[in-house]
Image (cartoon, rainbow over all chains, first blue to last red; front, side):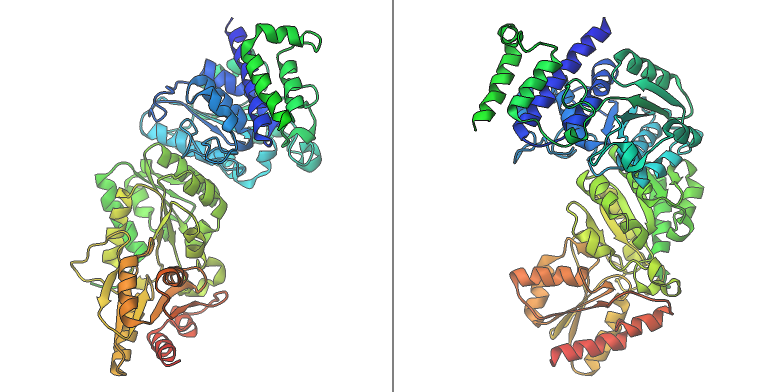
Length: 304
Length: 308
């Protein structure tokens, strides 16, 4: 039952991702769609937070180290009540707090500036350590991109995390989730610089590693449970995902790493995400007024 | 008061402040014996973190600690610390994390180790980043006050410290104020603005200049960002000639900051003394003489500049 609820939220968030990227005219759909099931499970099935008190000291923290997937983060933050969903279409516009990559200082709910890849894990280590030092029970979730792990700083942090704070302040409040969608900007990760063997690498650095299907909400939940039950060390979750997940023409195509859908493409993508056939679409929109409004708003962009 | 390295004064200050404020933590990258956080680490092992030779990770951990309300002193040689510019740019400056970045072994005065260990471009780099202030104390008393101030300051700071001993230059009743400079010696022919290591040499040079009938006003610019704009305008307006002295590249440091500001509001002939090109191995005294940062060199440059 819980999974049905989460699936429904994830679907709504996918629609919002496509909506905001269509309005922005630029951005990163592929990695946003691959990470959204993970973020949805975290924000609506796991995290302790209060959107009305974004600086509540005992909140759990999410650091989206792969900052280019920020449309996914904005979608869940809006859904969680940090800001109104209508603000989503200001993404990347002058004066908007919804910057092209996360800016902690302008948008409550963003824990750290990321987007310059490789830095989020170190910040997460510091957050986890600081929370331990203050006796807080809060947990830290860091989301890494697969291509991002080619950055050297990631490995400085990887080497450090299982040792930092030992023995009294061990970072078992830290969970790192790899969004392993197998594609980076230029090409498939395997072709640019293969990062395998991923599991063996992190294990050899002292991390317990859990491998899951990053689109199976049940598996994500179970892995988070397992991480929470682990003491003395942080946990690494390899989430096997599909870049562009849910949109047939975006899935597994490096072209959709950093290209926004044109209005017509965005509408088609939204239809696919909602699982509606082309012939049933007009009838469907009569019953779903929320989507109708989103689609109409995108259609206007075509005329501009 | 005997001469003391600002890194040593920093280590002592941290020990005192750490007893009063348990939010203070240190993060080091295998140089704690050099950055002088080692005694803090001995006294407060639960609050001192040595992350190995990994400065980027050290800076990021500092940022995360700061975001949970800790006050991290994140320390390495100035060159290795600021060399991780991109991490400072995003994880500290843009995140506006309350990290105290401590760069020791600044300048060519580290001597024999040679250029790769010399931080001489650090001020230029950090100065370009919004949110981060820059403090360079010139002696023991000023260092201890600056460190105490850094604990209270909300926001990231870069503290630039020396390996070499520094002669006392500040008066015993000195009170450090962020963004404020101190006139150490009054004068009217030329404004001599020094900071950190070579400041004592500025005072010595002023004595020589006085013997030649030149009255030099010597200012201690402990705060490189923000500048003390009021004092700068007042002194430059009076003397009409400004000479800056720093153990840093002549490009983009204190001299650059002063020249940029004066160019905007009160164009004044300004001579920048500092390091040209790369540094090299040698004794500190010899290196200062080579780059014209010794008392004789400063005096000669000032005279040439005034009579140009």
